[in-house]
Structures are given as structure tokens and as C-alpha cells.
Image (tube, each protein chain N blue to C red):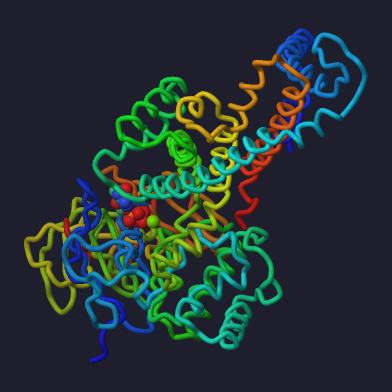
Length: 272
Length: 357
Ligand SMILES: Nc1ncnc2c1ncn2[C@@H]1O[C@H](COP(=O)(O)OP(=O)(O)O)[C@@H](O)[C@H]1O
Ligand SMILES: [Mg+2]
């Protein structure tokens, strides 16, 4: 009986008042700018300094801004393709890393973390240099390649974690019942790691969709993505349109991350 | 002659620097309930995995149904395994778990429905077939694992400590169910266990393993009454050991002498006059009396401790040389002995066993 009471107590005991005030301050500091941005995307006045009443007309203007819509289309194209490619490569890498013993396995395994550590600007310059040296035209293709390069590691790490957490010898059980290695993969391994793959893919998509620095270095003419477009719009100041498109991006990203955290926290979702 | 269901010939297995098995020889007969019994870490699971095909021996040969299976992958061997952790597929329904093997061998749909139904009925889980394995209790998962393996009608069923995770009441029920299934299906069962009671009650024959070697292969009664080594005698039940020397061998009887005196014991191959040996005595095969009895082996001593255990009482008897002898006596309506009583311990010649020293 009593162990459950101990847990209850731990869960229900609130922190001291100063700790709660401190947490509140931190959150206010972090989120006030974002809240202001969202608020001013509904501002009737063009100036960001004063409130002129509520309107949703800026969102309608966005819809008719052709170059902005083109940038959005580019962003979606890049994010989808980069996600697809990095998910396939990343999943295969994770399988190889956890299934096979080979020389340099540890090194390759830690290299997967590298793109997460390397400063984005360094990664951007390195990729730019690489594309120029290799004679690859800067275009939407180079952007996709660059995005694959930085997101593949995230997929590998996520899928690897999932593979490591697979309970028992399910694959041996499948083989024992007469499943060939191929059948075992598609009938047992794949369904079990699918949540990991999905969560890796979502992460890759979010990172690609939001990326500015690396895209800035590797995009050619006609490959302007949404973040690049927003940046160029800033030349005319922080207009309500910029606030509006930023709000949409924010909402979109938050949705993706919410989906991702659901996949991560609930091992059974989609895995059934 | 009919080939053995499973045969291991001088099989050794090394993992990197660690040698887990040393030249195992085993012949498992068709339709027999065979157990591999031994303490944890002695190589039982490894042996089972060699038969299933999850590992290849480092040297030696594994034969199934008389044919060598070297290089034959697990999915091509006609054996099925009940894993220690059950390893049910959590993303499939109970029905699909059981149907998994049949689908791999392309059995027709209506046949699958029928056979899965029968298999689930056999383990009393018919009404659960559409449910999920995660909703089952440990005992029920165990039954699904059993049905999933048996539905394929394998030549051999391998079971790796299938009852280790169950509570003791459920374990006893499962035990009799296993025995009943094995008898009615006539499939060869190879059971891995560290539970001597389980091995003794279930097996037709068993192999006692220790540190990667097989110590003895025989029937349960023999392993208890004629253990091949001190390890076997101690692992299965309890025993007293007296160091002795062989004095005389005649008419199937052997006379030995130890520090405590001279005793008669049933002769055993391999023990000649002058050999050193150990005499193993089971506590319940000895009885206590007041006076010495020339018709039986006997020893004088003093009761130094009594332990009441319900149906029996255990007596620790201190001998003249200071050694302690453990004896057991049924609690019938006759006199019991008290600590400090002078007693005589008796046993028949065929109650002792000679062991190599
Ligand atoms: N894959 C492995 N790699 C290294 N050592 C192993 C491996 N599998 C088993 N062993 C070792 O081999 C010995 C026998 O193991 P096992 O067959 O599982 O014993 P049991 O089933 O009798 O408890 C143990 O000491 C164990 O640590
Ligand atoms: Mg084991």
C-alpha cells in the first residue's frame, strides 16, 4: 500500500512560492516577444508601435502575395524531399549501426550526432564550399542536399533509440516461426520501429522547414524558401505581414512538434 | 533404428573469449520429454539456441531427425521455441500471433482459422483470440506462446524456462498442463530449467549440466538415487557425503571404510578395491533408532538439533568424530527424539551411492 502513497505525495507537493514565481518570470521572458508578435499580426495599424484595432486582413494579403506563396511552395518541396531522403538513409544507417558489427562502428555512430553540434554557420559555409568545389549549381537541389545532410543524423539517432528499446527477441521469435530475414523485417522490425521513424521524419521536416542559415548559404536563384523570403521582407521593416506569416509558421511548427512529442512519449501510438 | 529427434555430438561453443559449452553429447529420443537441468549460467540456453539455429557451434555437430543442420538458418528448421520472455508480437492480435508460423508456410486461410482455433482451445484461450497480447496476464501470455509454437506441429518443441516468471501456484498448474499436452501430442519436448522439482516431475529423461558440461543423462529416479557426481547429488535434493575407501567388492555389494566405520553399499562400475570414493546418503533414506542394528549400516551419534518442518522433522546428528549427519524422519505417532539424545543412524546398503572423489 504505502509505496503508492509516497509517489502521490511526490507528485502533488507544490514547489515553494519563490520557485513558482521564478519559473513564471523565465517563461514570461521567453514567450513575451512571441506573444507580442502574434498580437501585432492582428493589428490594424501598419506601425508596430501602436495598437490600431483588431483585423485579420494581413492574413488575406499574404494569400495574394505571389512571391511569398512561391517561397512557401519551395519550402514545402524542400522539406518533403529532404525528409523523405533523410528518413530512408537515416533509418538504414540506424539499422546497420545496431545490427552489424563492423570496423569504425562506434565512430560512425557518434558522427551521427555531429550535425547537431556543429554551428549552423560552419555547416553552411562547408556545404557551400563543397558544392562549389564539386561543380554543383546552387539551386533547389543543393538546398535539398544540404537539408538532408543536417537532418539525417536526427533520424538515425531517433530510430536507433527506438531499436535499442525493442523488448525481447521478437526477431528471433519470427525466425523461429519460419519468417525469412525479409519477412522478419517487414512483419516485425518495421512495425515496431515505425513510431521512431515517424518521429525522426517529423523532426527532420520541422528542422528543414524552419532552417535559415544553411539555406541562406546553399540556395541559388529561384530557390528562395519561406525563411529566406521573410528575411528579405524585413528590409521594409517589421510589417504586420511579416508578423502574420511568422505566426503561421509558428503555429505550423508547434503542431509538428506536438505531434512529435506525442510519438516520443507514447510508444504504442502507430506502433500497433 | 529410428534416428534421434535431436543429437548433439561433441558440441562446443565459445563467445569471443568465453567458452560456454565443452564437448556436449546428447541424444534426445523421439516423443520424449527431455529436460536440461542446471544452475543459472551453466549453458542451458546456449544449448537450446544451438538446436533452434540462433547460434552455430564452434565445433561438433547438431543433428535434427538424424540430419546435420550446420548452416541451416533458424527459419528453415522444423523446431519451435517458447522463449523465456515469451516474445509475443505486441503489434499483432492473439490470433495473428498464433497464425504467424502458418502464414509463413502459406497454409490456406480456412485451414489457418481452424488450426489457430484448435491451438487456442488447447490452451483454453479461445474467447480471447481477437484481443491483444498486452492485455493478457503472465500465465495467459505463456499459453499463447505455447499455442504459437505448437500450432506448427514441430518435430521438436524447445522451452526455455517457460515457467520461471509465473507465481508458484500457476507454475504447478502449468506444469501438469505441459505434461498433458506433450503426452497427447507426442511431440518431443526439450525443456530448459534450473528448477529440479520441475525437471524431476516432468521429464522422461534429463541431462544435468554444470559449467558447460553434461554431468549425467538418465531418468529422474536414477539421477536422484544414483547421482554421477557430487555436483549432481547436491544440486538435486540434499545429501550427506562421507569420504571412504573401497575394501572389498563381492556379489554386487561393495564394502567401504571411512573415518566413521565400515559400510556396505551397492556396487557401482568404476570402483575397485583400494579406490577413494565418496558415499552419498539422502537424509530421508536413513532412520533413527535407539540401538545399533547389525543387519543394516549404522552409526552412533548424538542429536544436536531438531528442525520441525510439518510432515517431517530434520535431525542433525553429531557423530563421534564431530561431523554432522542430516537425517529426516516422518512425523508419525511414534516417539520423537530430543536434542541431546544418543541415537543410532541406520540405512540400507542400496540407499547409499558411491561417487568419485
Ligand atoms: N552472446 C553471448 N556472449 C557472451 N557470453 C554469453 C553469450 N550468451 C551466453 N553467454 C555466457 O555463456 C554462459 C552460459 O549462458 P546460458 O547458456 O545463457 O546459461 P543458462 O541458460 O544455463 O543460464 C554464461 O556465462 C553467459 O554469460
Ligand atoms: Mg537461460
